[in-house]
Every structure is written in C-alpha cells, then in structure tokens.
Length: 375
Image (tube, rainbow, N blue to C red; front, top):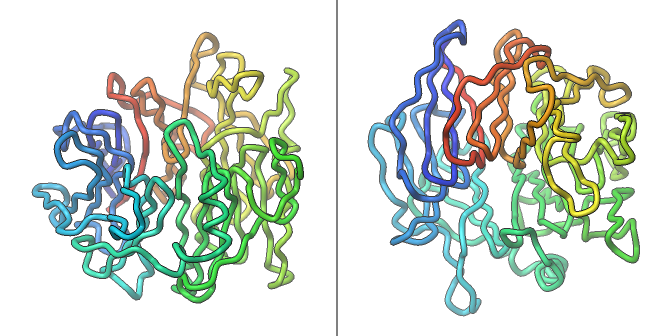
C-alpha cells in the first residue's frame, strides 16, 4: 500500500510518494512553484481528484483542481468570490474540505475575510453559502473579529459522515459553529470553552479555535485544539450535550506555562480514545515554537485523561519548530503513521504512532498544510 503526502507550502505544492513499507520516499516536482499554497487536499471519495487553494501573483486567490493525480491541472472557472453588493473581496482561500460521500462533486471552502463557499461540480464553480453569510450571529463575529496575524480565518470545516446536513466549522476569534440543516441555521458550540483574552472568559462565542475535528469513527465525539487548551465534547451518552471538557489540563510540564496550547490536532481514524497534539511555547509574546526548544508530541490513549510525551528522534535542544494548524496528518495504516510539517520546511514522520520520529523531507519552503492518502 503506497502512501502519498500532499504538502502546501509558502512557495508551491509538493507531493511526496512513499513505498508500501514507508521506508523509501520520492519528492515529485513542485506544482505552481513560487505561489502561496494554503491547502492541498486529496479527495478520499476519488483519490485521482486533488484540490489546491492558492494565492497567486497574477491570478490572485483561486483554486486549482486535478482529476488525474496531479498530472494536469485546471483553474476553477468561478473561484470563491463575494458578490459585488457585499463590498468586499476574497483575500485568499484558506481551507478546503471534501463533501459527504453521497455527494461526490461537493466541496466546501473557507476564505479570508471569513466566508463559506460550496461547489457542486467538483470545484469548477463556487457559490457563497447565503445562510451562513447572512446569519446575524456570524455577522457579529465578522464585525468584532481581529482575526489572526494573516487575517480572520474560516477553517476546520467538518462534514458529519453520517449526516451530510450536520456541519461544524470555526471562525478565528469567533468560536465553533454548528448547523444541522446543511448551512441555513447556525448555532454557537462553545459552552465551557475558555477565552481568557475577553472580559467574559466563557462567552457564547468569541473563542479562538485553532483546530476542531468531528471524530471519524464516532460523530458524537468532537475534539478541538484551542487558544486556551485542548477540549473534548462527548455526546455519546447525551445527544443534547453542548458542554466541553478541557482535557489538556492533564498535560503537565516543568515550566511555568500551559502545555496544552498549540495549533494542530491528530485523531486516530478508528480508536476514539487516541489523539495527538503538538504543543507550543505560549508564554509572553507567544513565540509559537517548541517549548524550551525541545520538540515533542503529546499522545493520549484514553481520551485525554492521561498523556505521554513523545520526542524520540527529534532534536534534543535548540530546535524551535513552528507547526501550523493544518500541518499534521495520519495515513490510516496499521501501525498508524503520523506526519508533521514545520515552517523550517521539514517533514517529520512516525510509523509507530509517535514513539519514534524521522525527518523524511527537508529544505522545503515553509509548510502550511499536510494531507495524506494511502492507496
């Protein structure tokens, strides 16, 4: 079973091919080299289909798509654009998510400034989702959002595999939002999630979500990596539960900082209790680098009650990794392979669920996103 790793970087998109043993790796020629690529996503419904969210020098923000594993590419005829009457323009497309398995030509895109778009023809033509854009709560979020260093982001678009109308997504400094009707009505999903940068530290909305995921094995379980820690929402015993539990408090370190602050999140595809987080230094000015210059991944086997520090193979000191919210992934194999890209252009991988790590590609541009698909 071969593995393909799809990398979005500051200077183009790259594909890294691995053999069935995941021991030999071959880096293919860059795609749209020199352009900013925010997300490069394979379609699990049809692995021949690939989608790229790019910010180009001459075309501006756009989407490219391939139907032959990346051998040829076409630009979207109508990429995500706000209608003229909205009085604003798309700065860049930040996030791409394939639609439900029952809708093979549907994709979703999150843009900056925050907007949600949908395509029903495999990515050629994109339309804004009016129910999302016109929602009064979301208008409040947009008006108050300071965003991130690169702008206000709409990200972490999750489609429930059991219900195509159940979607969750995140707004930077807006919190997590949920719909059960395909995108007409949206409600906040942030109860008991800390926002210590606001006067009301537990508001209805306004939290800064870094990464949120519906668990692929059980849609009643949702995890998130947050500006204020790692959280879990468990609806398995109560379908109406909307209260989050901070499970990252159980990660303990020896420095006077919180160890559960980071951007990416990895969930095991079949074991609902296994997850990994990459934490960062969030002290003072928020360096967003490895804590104490010692890269590590934290792994829980019991849904966040207990955590193990995994750092074997990483540099022991003076290594200040910065890992962005889309820059980790897993390959679905047994044992599970984990992948982590950093802004230094290094791709690290573990083929034993995080116990040991190796750098399988280096000297690349800053890595913005990592997606993996096995044949």
